[in-house]
Image (cartoon, rainbow, N blue to C red; front, side, top):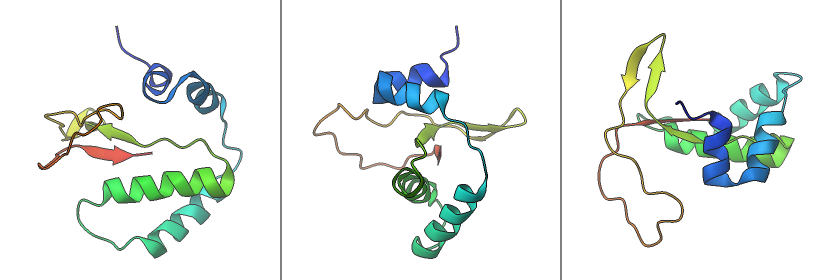
Length: 110
């Protein structure tokens, strides 16, 4: 049985966050456009910057527009073709004291 996005958000961010996320409807693309321009003017372009860009963009959407954006990390498929394959999960937020000192080959997006 596949796990839904709402179930994953609830597991990792809590039930309230999952409810907020799943009930949100974007009425206009303008906040996405404005916030993307803002983030791209601050975060320098570089290869593999998906983590930094996704985190900055999600926080900007939350702070400036009240949009319950969440950063997702893992595999990425486009039209059934695997673009990024994550071979190993990152430690979860509750894994205190863990240091990641290795390359990670997944992808992040909001």
